[in-house]
Amino acid sequence: MKRQQIIDKLKEVLNQITTVNGYQTDIGQNVFDWRLEPLRREETPCIVIRDIESYVDDYNNANDIRLELQFDIIMTTTIEDLRKALADLKKCLGQNETLDGLVFYMQWKNDSFDADLEEDRILVASCRVSTLYRVNRWEI
Image (tube, rainbow, N blue to C red; front, top):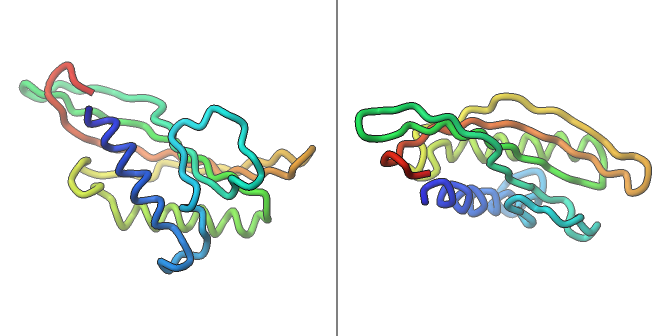
């Protein structure tokens, strides 16, 4: 299933976001696929990947699939650190735009910031990225 291969590859690629690898943050130390349980403070900073929507176009006997992904960066530090983490995410995805040939390309669509200041001062940066890949008909 190519869709799962893409998510697995994204996790592998995002795990490289560490200061040892030349990034500004260590958000790659905790990367989750559709994290549904509440996060513990020690699990932040982290990235949660969600494959949220797909669109299919017929191409001969194949399907071109545009997969919409959402990346949530969750931190409990400062807005400045959150901006650095977002820049790290964008840099990492830009350096791995085809995920070693799994997708034709990735395109950064938008990003936004949010905060829950009531209890734990949780800061979230969300971004949407579009990918395009091809599979046989009736596959995902």
